[in-house]
Image 1 (cartoon, rainbow, N blue to C red):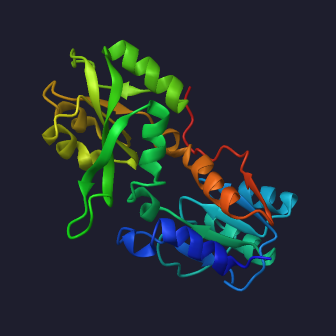
Image 2: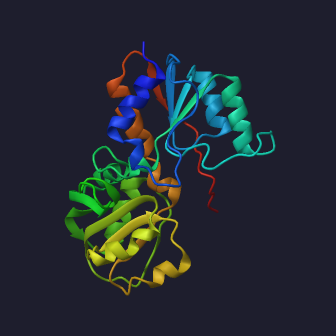
Image 3: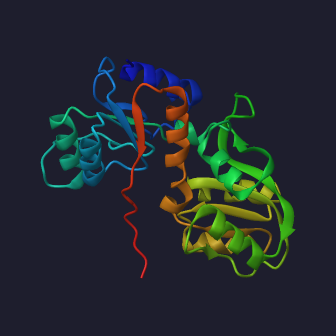
Length: 263
């Protein structure tokens, strides 16, 4: 048998909690570290539907990328999805553990390494290493395609590799793409660093309108959507857990938690 502390210790060996950003809330959010793990459900977000799925599958632990609670709460009622999720999880003795920006900030087994692997990038390294740490810790990633691609070829490659149906991009770029920078989730803060390192393309999400004017035709921006850029993190976390622990079942959620719809 394994307890939640065993799972937390293992995940924090891969992505230590002290690597999370100051605004984050990774770690055990609901539950007791001494609870025995029955089964685990892995999700990108924790919603009421995901909690219902956990109950149906007999999972008493949900490991998510995004924390259910980001900031302080003054009350818990049934007036919004966050509160209802908290109440449902607590009533059903379901623990919730988040592994968020600490998993973003590691190179090995990290969110961005997973994206780079799907794109077939080589010679990967952290785009913006954290100060006073080793070069394998920090934000974003940069690497190289096996062969240079024109813009249309690259867009098709990204669509197929990352399973996204819609890409916003800077159409003024006319060069070939070989060096690629990327950041799962909201990565616009790394645009200048990607340009400074002469990346031909920068893949991320949540760019503002005026960000697309800043590249001066030097780097093509691809905004593939927040959920779309991180959806493969579910498989990443599942693989990490299922390969380590064999005496309980691990499941990937089948719930699409993306709140953004396209028409």
